[in-house]
Amino acid sequence: MELAILAQQTLNGLILGATYGLIAIGYTMVYGIIGMINFAHGEIYMVSAYVTAIFLAVLHYFGLANVPLMLLAVLLATMFVTALYGWFLERIAYRPLRGSTRLAPLITAIGLSLILQNYVRLSQGARSQGIPSLLQGSFAITLGNDERLVQITYVQTLIIIVAFLSMAILTVIMHHTSLGRACRATEQDRIMASLLGIDTDRIIATVFVIGAAMAAIAGVLVTLNYGSFDFHIGFVTGIKAFTAAVLGGIGSLPGAMLGGLVLGLSESFFSGFVNADYKDVFAFSLLVLVLIFRPSGFLGHPQVVKV
Amino acid sequence: MGERTSLAQPLLALQEVSSHYGPVRALDRISLTVNAGEIVTLIGANGAGKSTLLMTLFGNPRASHGQILFAGQDITHLPTHRISPLGLALVPEGRRIFPGMTVLENIALGHTALGNHRQGPSLDFLYTHFPILKERQRQKAGTLSGGEQQMLAIARALMSQPRLLLLDEPSLGLAPMMIRKIFALIRSLVQSGIQSGVQPETAVFLVEQNAHQALQIADRGYVLVNGTIRLTGTGHDLLNNPEVKHAYLGTLV
Ligand SMILES: Nc1ncnc2c1ncn2[C@@H]1O[C@H](COP(=O)(O)OP(=O)(O)OP(=O)(O)O)[C@@H](O)[C@H]1O
Ligand SMILES: [Mg+2]
Image (cartoon, rainbow over all chains, first blue to last red; front, side, top):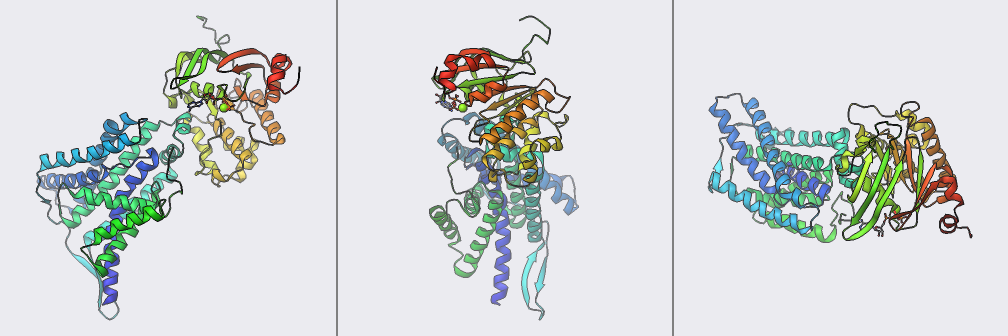
Protein backbone atom coordinates (compact mmCIF):
# COMPACT_ATOMS: atom_id res chain seq x y z
CA MET A 1 0.00 0.00 0.00
CA GLU A 2 2.81 2.36 0.93
CA LEU A 3 4.49 1.36 -2.30
CA ALA A 4 1.36 2.18 -4.27
CA ILE A 5 1.21 5.66 -2.78
CA LEU A 6 4.86 6.18 -3.53
CA ALA A 7 4.39 5.08 -7.13
CA GLN A 8 1.30 7.24 -7.56
CA GLN A 9 2.99 10.30 -6.11
CA THR A 10 6.04 9.71 -8.33
CA LEU A 11 3.79 9.64 -11.36
CA ASN A 12 1.96 12.79 -10.27
CA GLY A 13 5.28 14.46 -9.57
CA LEU A 14 6.64 13.57 -13.00
CA ILE A 15 3.60 15.03 -14.69
CA LEU A 16 3.66 18.18 -12.62
CA GLY A 17 7.42 18.46 -13.08
CA ALA A 18 7.22 18.02 -16.84
CA THR A 19 4.86 20.98 -17.10
CA TYR A 20 7.01 23.10 -14.78
CA GLY A 21 10.00 22.16 -16.90
CA LEU A 22 8.27 23.18 -20.13
CA ILE A 23 7.41 26.59 -18.73
CA ALA A 24 10.80 26.99 -17.05
CA ILE A 25 12.45 26.72 -20.47
CA GLY A 26 11.06 30.15 -21.38
CA TYR A 27 12.43 31.77 -18.23
CA THR A 28 15.82 30.19 -18.56
CA MET A 29 16.36 30.81 -22.28
CA VAL A 30 15.33 34.46 -22.07
CA TYR A 31 17.53 34.95 -19.03
CA GLY A 32 20.38 33.22 -20.80
CA ILE A 33 20.19 35.45 -23.83
CA ILE A 34 19.37 38.89 -22.43
CA GLY A 35 19.97 38.47 -18.70
CA MET A 36 16.42 39.39 -17.79
CA ILE A 37 13.66 37.56 -15.92
CA ASN A 38 10.57 37.76 -18.08
CA PHE A 39 7.97 37.88 -15.33
CA ALA A 40 5.21 38.09 -17.93
CA HIS A 41 6.02 34.53 -19.01
CA GLY A 42 3.50 33.00 -16.58
CA GLU A 43 0.78 35.04 -18.29
CA ILE A 44 1.85 33.66 -21.64
CA TYR A 45 1.12 30.24 -20.21
CA MET A 46 -2.27 31.50 -18.96
CA VAL A 47 -3.11 32.90 -22.39
CA SER A 48 -2.30 29.54 -23.96
CA ALA A 49 -4.96 27.86 -21.79
CA TYR A 50 -7.59 30.19 -23.22
CA VAL A 51 -6.28 29.72 -26.74
CA THR A 52 -6.54 25.97 -26.26
CA ALA A 53 -10.21 26.27 -25.27
CA ILE A 54 -10.96 28.60 -28.16
CA PHE A 55 -9.40 26.29 -30.74
CA LEU A 56 -11.17 23.27 -29.26
CA ALA A 57 -14.46 25.12 -29.54
CA VAL A 58 -13.73 26.18 -33.11
CA LEU A 59 -12.76 22.68 -34.23
CA HIS A 60 -15.79 21.26 -32.49
CA TYR A 61 -17.98 23.80 -34.25
CA PHE A 62 -16.62 22.65 -37.59
CA GLY A 63 -17.45 19.12 -36.64
CA LEU A 64 -14.01 17.61 -36.31
CA ALA A 65 -14.62 14.38 -34.44
CA ASN A 66 -11.30 12.59 -34.73
CA VAL A 67 -9.78 13.09 -31.27
CA PRO A 68 -6.08 12.51 -32.02
CA LEU A 69 -6.27 14.80 -35.03
CA MET A 70 -8.11 17.40 -32.98
CA LEU A 71 -5.50 17.27 -30.22
CA LEU A 72 -2.68 17.65 -32.68
CA ALA A 73 -4.36 20.56 -34.43
CA VAL A 74 -5.10 22.29 -31.13
CA LEU A 75 -1.55 21.79 -29.94
CA LEU A 76 0.03 23.22 -33.09
CA ALA A 77 -2.42 26.10 -33.41
CA THR A 78 -2.05 27.05 -29.75
CA MET A 79 1.73 26.93 -30.01
CA PHE A 80 1.55 29.20 -33.02
CA VAL A 81 -0.78 31.79 -31.52
CA THR A 82 1.01 31.81 -28.16
CA ALA A 83 4.36 32.15 -29.91
CA LEU A 84 2.95 35.24 -31.62
CA TYR A 85 2.19 36.68 -28.20
CA GLY A 86 5.77 35.98 -27.12
CA TRP A 87 7.16 37.57 -30.26
CA PHE A 88 4.89 40.59 -29.88
CA LEU A 89 5.86 41.16 -26.23
CA GLU A 90 9.54 41.15 -27.08
CA ARG A 91 9.00 43.42 -30.03
CA ILE A 92 6.89 46.12 -28.39
CA ALA A 93 7.94 45.94 -24.75
CA TYR A 94 11.48 44.63 -24.38
CA ARG A 95 13.37 45.50 -27.54
CA PRO A 96 12.87 49.26 -27.15
CA LEU A 97 14.38 48.99 -23.66
CA ARG A 98 17.48 47.12 -24.71
CA GLY A 99 20.52 48.99 -23.51
CA SER A 100 18.65 50.85 -20.77
CA THR A 101 19.00 50.07 -17.06
CA ARG A 102 18.48 46.51 -15.87
CA LEU A 103 15.47 47.54 -13.85
CA ALA A 104 13.44 48.94 -16.76
CA PRO A 105 12.58 45.65 -18.50
CA LEU A 106 11.87 44.06 -15.13
CA ILE A 107 9.28 46.69 -14.27
CA THR A 108 7.89 46.44 -17.78
CA ALA A 109 7.53 42.68 -17.33
CA ILE A 110 5.46 43.15 -14.21
CA GLY A 111 3.35 45.77 -15.96
CA LEU A 112 2.83 43.45 -18.93
CA SER A 113 1.71 40.72 -16.56
CA LEU A 114 -1.03 42.95 -15.22
CA ILE A 115 -2.02 44.07 -18.70
CA LEU A 116 -2.29 40.51 -19.98
CA GLN A 117 -4.29 39.37 -16.96
CA ASN A 118 -6.74 42.21 -17.30
CA TYR A 119 -6.93 41.88 -21.06
CA VAL A 120 -7.96 38.25 -20.61
CA ARG A 121 -10.31 39.09 -17.78
CA LEU A 122 -12.06 41.76 -19.81
CA SER A 123 -12.26 39.79 -23.01
CA GLN A 124 -13.03 36.35 -21.55
CA GLY A 125 -14.66 37.12 -18.23
CA ALA A 126 -13.43 36.70 -14.70
CA ARG A 127 -15.15 33.39 -14.03
CA SER A 128 -13.32 30.14 -14.26
CA GLN A 129 -13.67 28.53 -17.68
CA GLY A 130 -13.66 24.90 -18.63
CA ILE A 131 -13.41 22.44 -21.48
CA PRO A 132 -15.11 19.05 -21.74
CA SER A 133 -12.80 16.12 -21.25
CA LEU A 134 -11.82 14.65 -24.56
CA LEU A 135 -9.79 11.66 -23.58
CA GLN A 136 -11.35 9.44 -20.99
CA GLY A 137 -9.99 6.26 -19.58
CA SER A 138 -6.87 5.01 -17.92
CA PHE A 139 -4.51 2.12 -17.53
CA ALA A 140 -3.81 0.43 -14.25
CA ILE A 141 -0.34 -0.89 -13.73
CA THR A 142 -0.51 -3.84 -11.37
CA LEU A 143 1.93 -5.91 -9.44
CA GLY A 144 2.16 -9.69 -9.94
CA ASN A 145 -0.37 -10.43 -7.21
CA ASP A 146 -3.01 -8.28 -8.87
CA GLU A 147 -2.55 -5.51 -6.38
CA ARG A 148 -2.95 -2.22 -8.16
CA LEU A 149 0.24 -0.19 -8.14
CA VAL A 150 -0.66 2.93 -10.02
CA GLN A 151 -3.45 4.33 -12.11
CA ILE A 152 -2.45 6.42 -15.12
CA THR A 153 -4.99 8.18 -17.29
CA TYR A 154 -4.66 8.57 -21.04
CA VAL A 155 -4.25 12.29 -20.62
CA GLN A 156 -1.41 11.78 -18.15
CA THR A 157 0.26 9.42 -20.59
CA LEU A 158 -0.13 12.03 -23.28
CA ILE A 159 1.40 14.69 -21.03
CA ILE A 160 4.45 12.60 -20.32
CA ILE A 161 5.00 11.63 -23.95
CA VAL A 162 4.44 15.11 -25.42
CA ALA A 163 6.42 16.93 -22.74
CA PHE A 164 9.49 14.73 -22.98
CA LEU A 165 9.32 14.53 -26.74
CA SER A 166 9.20 18.31 -27.10
CA MET A 167 12.08 18.76 -24.67
CA ALA A 168 14.09 16.24 -26.69
CA ILE A 169 13.27 18.01 -29.95
CA LEU A 170 14.25 21.37 -28.51
CA THR A 171 17.53 19.94 -27.26
CA VAL A 172 18.31 18.57 -30.71
CA ILE A 173 17.47 21.94 -32.30
CA MET A 174 19.71 23.80 -29.89
CA HIS A 175 22.66 21.47 -30.36
CA HIS A 176 22.51 20.27 -33.92
CA THR A 177 21.14 23.04 -36.11
CA SER A 178 22.64 26.31 -37.24
CA LEU A 179 19.76 28.16 -35.58
CA GLY A 180 20.61 26.51 -32.25
CA ARG A 181 24.26 27.30 -32.75
CA ALA A 182 23.43 30.94 -33.42
CA CYS A 183 21.26 31.03 -30.28
CA ARG A 184 24.06 29.66 -28.14
CA ALA A 185 26.62 32.01 -29.69
CA THR A 186 24.37 35.00 -29.05
CA GLU A 187 23.92 33.84 -25.49
CA GLN A 188 27.65 33.52 -24.88
CA ASP A 189 28.81 36.73 -26.56
CA ARG A 190 26.21 38.86 -28.29
CA ILE A 191 28.67 41.33 -29.79
CA MET A 192 30.93 38.65 -31.21
CA ALA A 193 27.91 36.88 -32.64
CA SER A 194 26.87 40.03 -34.49
CA LEU A 195 30.44 40.58 -35.72
CA LEU A 196 30.20 37.15 -37.30
CA GLY A 197 27.03 38.15 -39.14
CA ILE A 198 24.37 36.78 -36.80
CA ASP A 199 21.29 39.01 -36.58
CA THR A 200 21.12 38.94 -32.79
CA ASP A 201 17.82 40.85 -32.60
CA ARG A 202 16.24 38.13 -34.66
CA ILE A 203 17.79 35.45 -32.46
CA ILE A 204 16.47 37.12 -29.30
CA ALA A 205 12.99 37.29 -30.82
CA THR A 206 13.30 33.62 -31.74
CA VAL A 207 14.13 32.74 -28.15
CA PHE A 208 10.96 34.48 -26.95
CA VAL A 209 9.01 32.57 -29.58
CA ILE A 210 10.51 29.24 -28.50
CA GLY A 211 9.84 29.99 -24.82
CA ALA A 212 6.23 30.91 -25.53
CA ALA A 213 5.70 27.84 -27.71
CA MET A 214 7.02 25.56 -24.96
CA ALA A 215 4.76 27.26 -22.41
CA ALA A 216 1.89 26.72 -24.84
CA ILE A 217 2.59 22.99 -24.88
CA ALA A 218 2.32 23.02 -21.09
CA GLY A 219 -0.86 25.12 -21.35
CA VAL A 220 -2.55 22.66 -23.72
CA LEU A 221 -1.54 19.63 -21.67
CA VAL A 222 -2.56 21.04 -18.30
CA THR A 223 -5.85 22.30 -19.69
CA LEU A 224 -6.62 18.85 -21.11
CA ASN A 225 -5.80 17.34 -17.74
CA TYR A 226 -7.66 19.69 -15.38
CA GLY A 227 -10.29 21.02 -17.73
CA SER A 228 -10.64 24.36 -15.97
CA PHE A 229 -8.67 27.57 -15.75
CA ASP A 230 -9.05 31.28 -15.05
CA PHE A 231 -7.13 34.46 -15.74
CA HIS A 232 -5.11 33.98 -12.56
CA ILE A 233 -3.43 30.66 -13.23
CA GLY A 234 -0.33 32.27 -14.72
CA PHE A 235 0.79 33.71 -11.42
CA VAL A 236 1.39 30.70 -9.19
CA THR A 237 2.37 28.39 -12.03
CA GLY A 238 4.71 31.06 -13.36
CA ILE A 239 6.46 31.44 -10.04
CA LYS A 240 6.71 27.68 -9.66
CA ALA A 241 8.28 27.38 -13.11
CA PHE A 242 10.61 30.24 -12.28
CA THR A 243 11.57 28.33 -9.12
CA ALA A 244 12.28 25.31 -11.29
CA ALA A 245 14.50 27.40 -13.57
CA VAL A 246 16.45 28.74 -10.59
CA LEU A 247 16.68 25.29 -9.05
CA GLY A 248 18.19 23.86 -12.22
CA GLY A 249 20.48 26.83 -12.72
CA ILE A 250 18.98 29.77 -14.54
CA GLY A 251 20.33 30.07 -18.06
CA SER A 252 20.75 26.32 -18.42
CA LEU A 253 18.34 24.47 -20.70
CA PRO A 254 18.85 20.97 -19.25
CA GLY A 255 18.79 22.69 -15.85
CA ALA A 256 15.26 23.98 -16.47
CA MET A 257 14.01 20.52 -17.32
CA LEU A 258 15.81 18.94 -14.39
CA GLY A 259 14.68 21.71 -12.03
CA GLY A 260 11.09 21.20 -13.19
CA LEU A 261 11.21 17.50 -12.45
CA VAL A 262 12.88 17.96 -9.06
CA LEU A 263 10.35 20.58 -8.04
CA GLY A 264 7.39 18.57 -9.34
CA LEU A 265 8.52 15.40 -7.59
CA SER A 266 9.35 17.05 -4.29
CA GLU A 267 6.10 18.98 -4.30
CA SER A 268 4.18 15.83 -5.02
CA PHE A 269 5.94 13.85 -2.29
CA PHE A 270 5.43 16.68 0.14
CA SER A 271 1.71 16.84 -0.51
CA GLY A 272 1.41 13.04 -0.47
CA PHE A 273 3.36 12.35 2.68
CA VAL A 274 3.42 15.56 4.67
CA ASN A 275 0.70 18.06 3.98
CA ALA A 276 -1.12 18.93 0.81
CA ASP A 277 -2.23 22.38 2.00
CA TYR A 278 1.30 23.61 2.41
CA LYS A 279 2.73 22.42 -0.90
CA ASP A 280 3.08 25.96 -2.29
CA VAL A 281 4.77 27.11 0.89
CA PHE A 282 7.10 24.17 0.49
CA ALA A 283 7.91 25.05 -3.12
CA PHE A 284 8.65 28.66 -2.30
CA SER A 285 10.73 27.71 0.74
CA LEU A 286 12.75 25.58 -1.63
CA LEU A 287 13.25 28.65 -3.85
CA VAL A 288 14.46 30.70 -0.90
CA LEU A 289 16.82 27.96 0.25
CA VAL A 290 18.29 27.54 -3.23
CA LEU A 291 18.76 31.27 -3.60
CA ILE A 292 20.58 31.39 -0.26
CA PHE A 293 22.75 28.31 -0.49
CA ARG A 294 23.21 27.60 -4.16
CA PRO A 295 22.13 30.55 -6.29
CA SER A 296 23.68 28.97 -9.38
CA GLY A 297 21.37 25.94 -9.07
CA PHE A 298 22.19 22.38 -10.09
CA LEU A 299 23.63 23.05 -13.54
CA GLY A 300 24.14 26.80 -13.69
CA HIS A 301 27.42 28.62 -13.88
CA PRO A 302 28.74 29.87 -10.53
CA GLN A 303 28.59 33.55 -11.37
CA VAL A 304 25.10 34.96 -11.69
CA VAL A 305 26.01 38.41 -12.89
CA LYS A 306 25.89 38.78 -16.64
CA VAL A 307 27.59 41.57 -18.52
CA MET B 1 36.65 60.05 -56.21
CA GLY B 2 34.34 59.70 -59.14
CA GLU B 3 36.69 57.23 -60.80
CA ARG B 4 35.04 53.97 -61.69
CA THR B 5 38.13 51.88 -62.18
CA SER B 6 38.19 49.27 -59.47
CA LEU B 7 41.99 49.15 -59.52
CA ALA B 8 42.27 52.68 -58.22
CA GLN B 9 39.62 52.14 -55.59
CA PRO B 10 40.90 51.14 -52.16
CA LEU B 11 39.29 48.09 -50.57
CA LEU B 12 38.74 49.96 -47.33
CA ALA B 13 38.69 53.71 -46.95
CA LEU B 14 38.05 55.73 -43.82
CA GLN B 15 37.34 59.39 -44.37
CA GLU B 16 37.58 61.63 -41.32
CA VAL B 17 36.05 59.03 -39.04
CA SER B 18 35.42 59.91 -35.40
CA SER B 19 33.80 57.82 -32.70
CA HIS B 20 32.82 58.29 -29.09
CA TYR B 21 32.11 56.31 -25.97
CA GLY B 22 29.42 58.45 -24.45
CA PRO B 23 30.92 61.92 -24.27
CA VAL B 24 34.50 60.65 -24.56
CA ARG B 25 36.03 60.90 -28.02
CA ALA B 26 38.12 57.83 -28.81
CA LEU B 27 38.83 58.49 -32.51
CA ASP B 28 39.32 61.90 -34.03
CA ARG B 29 38.93 62.28 -37.80
CA ILE B 30 40.83 59.22 -38.89
CA SER B 31 41.51 58.80 -42.58
CA LEU B 32 43.23 55.73 -43.90
CA THR B 33 43.06 53.21 -46.73
CA VAL B 34 43.79 49.56 -47.28
CA ASN B 35 44.18 48.28 -50.84
CA ALA B 36 43.39 44.82 -52.08
CA GLY B 37 46.29 42.43 -51.56
CA GLU B 38 48.04 44.68 -49.05
CA ILE B 39 49.20 44.13 -45.49
CA VAL B 40 48.67 47.34 -43.55
CA THR B 41 49.76 47.69 -39.95
CA LEU B 42 48.41 50.03 -37.31
CA ILE B 43 50.59 50.59 -34.27
CA GLY B 44 49.88 52.64 -31.18
CA ALA B 45 50.24 52.67 -27.42
CA ASN B 46 47.70 51.33 -24.94
CA GLY B 47 44.51 53.33 -25.13
CA ALA B 48 45.40 54.98 -28.45
CA GLY B 49 42.15 53.75 -29.95
CA LYS B 50 43.32 50.80 -32.07
CA SER B 51 40.61 48.39 -30.99
CA THR B 52 38.04 51.15 -31.18
CA LEU B 53 39.04 51.76 -34.79
CA LEU B 54 38.41 48.12 -35.69
CA MET B 55 35.12 47.99 -33.81
CA THR B 56 33.97 51.22 -35.42
CA LEU B 57 34.18 49.51 -38.81
CA PHE B 58 31.45 47.22 -37.48
CA GLY B 59 29.36 50.02 -36.03
CA ASN B 60 30.16 49.25 -32.42
CA PRO B 61 30.57 52.08 -31.45
CA ARG B 62 29.09 53.72 -34.52
CA ALA B 63 31.11 56.42 -36.26
CA SER B 64 29.90 59.80 -35.05
CA HIS B 65 31.49 61.60 -37.97
CA GLY B 66 32.91 60.76 -41.38
CA GLN B 67 32.44 57.88 -43.76
CA ILE B 68 33.58 54.28 -44.01
CA LEU B 69 33.71 52.78 -47.49
CA PHE B 70 34.27 49.13 -48.26
CA ALA B 71 34.84 48.26 -51.90
CA GLY B 72 33.22 51.58 -52.72
CA GLN B 73 30.10 50.89 -50.67
CA ASP B 74 29.22 53.20 -47.79
CA ILE B 75 29.01 50.94 -44.72
CA THR B 76 29.00 53.68 -42.08
CA HIS B 77 25.40 53.11 -41.06
CA LEU B 78 24.94 49.41 -41.73
CA PRO B 79 23.81 47.25 -38.79
CA THR B 80 26.69 45.28 -37.27
CA HIS B 81 25.55 41.89 -38.55
CA ARG B 82 25.42 43.15 -42.13
CA ILE B 83 29.13 44.05 -42.23
CA SER B 84 30.87 40.69 -42.23
CA PRO B 85 28.80 39.31 -45.14
CA LEU B 86 30.42 42.02 -47.29
CA GLY B 87 33.81 40.39 -46.78
CA LEU B 88 35.31 41.77 -43.57
CA ALA B 89 36.36 39.40 -40.82
CA LEU B 90 37.66 40.44 -37.42
CA VAL B 91 39.87 38.57 -35.01
CA PRO B 92 38.96 40.77 -32.07
CA GLU B 93 40.88 41.86 -29.02
CA GLY B 94 40.81 39.07 -26.45
CA ARG B 95 39.96 36.52 -29.17
CA ARG B 96 36.33 36.18 -28.08
CA ILE B 97 35.94 32.56 -29.00
CA PHE B 98 32.79 30.91 -27.66
CA PRO B 99 34.18 28.98 -24.70
CA GLY B 100 31.16 26.75 -24.13
CA MET B 101 31.08 25.48 -27.70
CA THR B 102 33.32 22.98 -29.38
CA VAL B 103 36.22 23.99 -31.60
CA LEU B 104 34.30 22.72 -34.61
CA GLU B 105 31.20 24.73 -33.69
CA ASN B 106 33.31 27.86 -33.31
CA ILE B 107 34.78 27.30 -36.75
CA ALA B 108 31.33 26.65 -38.20
CA LEU B 109 30.07 29.95 -36.78
CA GLY B 110 32.68 31.70 -38.89
CA HIS B 111 30.77 30.52 -41.93
CA THR B 112 27.64 32.50 -40.93
CA ALA B 113 28.70 35.53 -42.95
CA LEU B 114 28.61 33.52 -46.18
CA GLY B 115 25.00 32.46 -45.68
CA ASN B 116 23.65 29.13 -46.87
CA HIS B 117 24.57 29.41 -50.48
CA ARG B 118 28.22 30.38 -50.61
CA GLN B 119 30.89 27.87 -49.89
CA GLY B 120 33.82 28.85 -47.68
CA PRO B 121 37.25 27.33 -47.39
CA SER B 122 37.23 23.63 -46.65
CA LEU B 123 37.97 22.27 -43.21
CA ASP B 124 40.92 20.42 -44.74
CA PHE B 125 42.39 23.72 -45.83
CA LEU B 126 42.04 25.17 -42.33
CA TYR B 127 43.42 22.06 -40.70
CA THR B 128 46.55 22.06 -42.87
CA HIS B 129 47.30 25.50 -41.43
CA PHE B 130 46.13 24.67 -37.92
CA PRO B 131 46.67 20.95 -37.36
CA ILE B 132 46.21 21.37 -33.62
CA LEU B 133 42.61 22.46 -34.17
CA LYS B 134 41.89 19.21 -35.91
CA GLU B 135 43.11 17.28 -32.90
CA ARG B 136 40.97 19.41 -30.64
CA GLN B 137 37.88 19.74 -32.82
CA ARG B 138 35.49 17.99 -30.44
CA GLN B 139 36.84 19.75 -27.36
CA LYS B 140 35.19 22.77 -25.72
CA ALA B 141 36.96 25.87 -27.02
CA GLY B 142 37.30 27.22 -23.46
CA THR B 143 39.71 24.40 -22.65
CA LEU B 144 42.23 25.44 -25.34
CA SER B 145 45.46 27.19 -24.44
CA GLY B 146 45.84 30.88 -25.22
CA GLY B 147 47.78 30.23 -28.41
CA GLU B 148 45.33 27.61 -29.55
CA GLN B 149 42.45 30.01 -28.90
CA GLN B 150 44.21 32.63 -31.01
CA MET B 151 44.52 30.13 -33.84
CA LEU B 152 40.88 29.23 -33.44
CA ALA B 153 39.88 32.89 -33.64
CA ILE B 154 41.91 33.25 -36.84
CA ALA B 155 40.50 30.05 -38.31
CA ARG B 156 36.98 31.21 -37.49
CA ALA B 157 37.64 34.50 -39.30
CA LEU B 158 39.06 32.69 -42.34
CA MET B 159 35.92 30.56 -42.60
CA SER B 160 34.07 33.55 -44.03
CA GLN B 161 36.67 33.82 -46.79
CA PRO B 162 37.18 37.52 -46.13
CA ARG B 163 38.46 40.04 -48.60
CA LEU B 164 39.80 41.97 -45.63
CA LEU B 165 41.11 40.21 -42.56
CA LEU B 166 41.32 42.44 -39.49
CA LEU B 167 43.54 41.28 -36.66
CA ASP B 168 43.66 42.94 -33.24
CA GLU B 169 46.96 42.14 -31.55
CA PRO B 170 47.18 38.51 -32.62
CA SER B 171 50.58 38.18 -30.95
CA LEU B 172 49.36 39.19 -27.50
CA GLY B 173 50.32 36.63 -24.87
CA LEU B 174 51.94 34.25 -27.33
CA ALA B 175 55.41 32.74 -27.21
CA PRO B 176 57.90 34.14 -29.75
CA MET B 177 57.81 30.92 -31.73
CA MET B 178 54.03 31.10 -31.98
CA ILE B 179 54.19 34.76 -32.97
CA ARG B 180 56.57 33.93 -35.81
CA LYS B 181 54.23 31.18 -36.93
CA ILE B 182 51.21 33.45 -36.95
CA PHE B 183 53.02 36.21 -38.82
CA ALA B 184 54.30 33.73 -41.37
CA LEU B 185 50.76 32.50 -41.79
CA ILE B 186 49.45 36.03 -42.35
CA ARG B 187 52.05 36.54 -45.07
CA SER B 188 51.28 33.28 -46.77
CA LEU B 189 47.55 33.95 -46.63
CA VAL B 190 47.96 37.18 -48.52
CA GLN B 191 50.36 35.65 -51.01
CA SER B 192 48.34 32.53 -51.72
CA GLY B 193 44.89 33.96 -51.17
CA ILE B 194 42.74 32.70 -48.38
CA GLN B 195 41.94 29.69 -50.45
CA SER B 196 44.54 29.48 -53.13
CA GLY B 197 43.34 31.09 -56.30
CA VAL B 198 39.84 31.91 -55.13
CA GLN B 199 40.46 35.09 -53.21
CA PRO B 200 43.88 36.27 -54.38
CA GLU B 201 43.35 39.87 -53.43
CA THR B 202 42.88 39.32 -49.73
CA ALA B 203 44.14 42.20 -47.63
CA VAL B 204 45.19 42.21 -44.00
CA PHE B 205 44.82 45.05 -41.55
CA LEU B 206 47.01 44.23 -38.59
CA VAL B 207 46.84 46.07 -35.28
CA GLU B 208 49.89 45.43 -33.17
CA GLN B 209 51.92 46.56 -30.22
CA ASN B 210 54.56 44.15 -31.33
CA ALA B 211 55.62 46.87 -33.76
CA HIS B 212 58.85 45.42 -35.04
CA GLN B 213 57.54 42.23 -36.54
CA ALA B 214 54.30 43.83 -37.63
CA LEU B 215 56.07 46.56 -39.58
CA GLN B 216 58.44 44.03 -41.10
CA ILE B 217 55.68 42.13 -42.82
CA ALA B 218 53.64 45.24 -43.64
CA ASP B 219 53.47 47.02 -46.98
CA ARG B 220 52.38 50.17 -45.25
CA GLY B 221 51.75 51.34 -41.72
CA TYR B 222 49.99 53.96 -39.65
CA VAL B 223 50.85 55.23 -36.18
CA LEU B 224 47.88 56.07 -33.98
CA VAL B 225 48.34 58.49 -31.07
CA ASN B 226 45.45 59.52 -28.86
CA GLY B 227 42.84 58.75 -31.46
CA THR B 228 44.54 60.51 -34.37
CA ILE B 229 46.87 59.31 -37.11
CA ARG B 230 50.27 60.71 -36.31
CA LEU B 231 52.45 59.11 -38.98
CA THR B 232 52.09 57.00 -42.05
CA GLY B 233 54.48 55.41 -44.50
CA THR B 234 55.79 52.14 -45.84
CA GLY B 235 56.65 49.47 -43.30
CA HIS B 236 60.31 50.03 -44.05
CA ASP B 237 60.11 53.83 -43.58
CA LEU B 238 58.32 53.49 -40.27
CA LEU B 239 60.83 50.95 -39.01
CA ASN B 240 63.55 53.53 -39.58
CA ASN B 241 61.61 56.53 -38.34
CA PRO B 242 63.29 57.95 -35.20
CA GLU B 243 60.00 58.68 -33.47
CA VAL B 244 58.71 55.17 -34.09
CA LYS B 245 62.03 53.71 -33.03
CA HIS B 246 61.91 55.63 -29.82
CA ALA B 247 58.28 55.14 -28.88
CA TYR B 248 57.45 51.69 -30.23
CA LEU B 249 60.59 49.76 -30.94
CA GLY B 250 62.28 50.35 -27.62
CA THR B 251 65.52 51.58 -29.14
CA LEU B 252 67.19 54.81 -28.13
CA VAL B 253 67.63 57.33 -30.90
N1 LIG C 1 33.58 50.25 -23.97
C1 LIG C 1 34.24 51.40 -23.67
N2 LIG C 1 33.62 52.37 -22.95
C2 LIG C 1 34.24 53.52 -22.64
N3 LIG C 1 35.49 53.81 -23.01
C3 LIG C 1 36.16 52.89 -23.73
C4 LIG C 1 35.57 51.64 -24.09
N4 LIG C 1 36.47 50.93 -24.79
C5 LIG C 1 37.57 51.70 -24.86
N5 LIG C 1 37.40 52.89 -24.23
C6 LIG C 1 38.36 53.97 -24.13
O1 LIG C 1 38.69 54.37 -25.45
C7 LIG C 1 40.09 54.59 -25.57
C8 LIG C 1 40.67 53.73 -26.65
O2 LIG C 1 40.57 52.38 -26.26
P1 LIG C 1 41.01 51.18 -27.19
O3 LIG C 1 40.58 49.92 -26.52
O4 LIG C 1 40.53 51.42 -28.55
O5 LIG C 1 42.60 51.31 -27.15
P2 LIG C 1 43.70 50.36 -27.79
O6 LIG C 1 44.55 51.21 -28.63
O7 LIG C 1 43.09 49.18 -28.41
O8 LIG C 1 44.52 49.93 -26.49
P3 LIG C 1 45.23 48.54 -26.14
O9 LIG C 1 46.52 48.54 -26.84
O10 LIG C 1 45.41 48.61 -24.67
O11 LIG C 1 44.33 47.46 -26.56
C9 LIG C 1 40.67 54.32 -24.18
O12 LIG C 1 40.86 55.55 -23.55
C10 LIG C 1 39.64 53.50 -23.49
O13 LIG C 1 39.63 53.75 -22.11
MG1 LIG D 1 43.09 47.23 -28.03
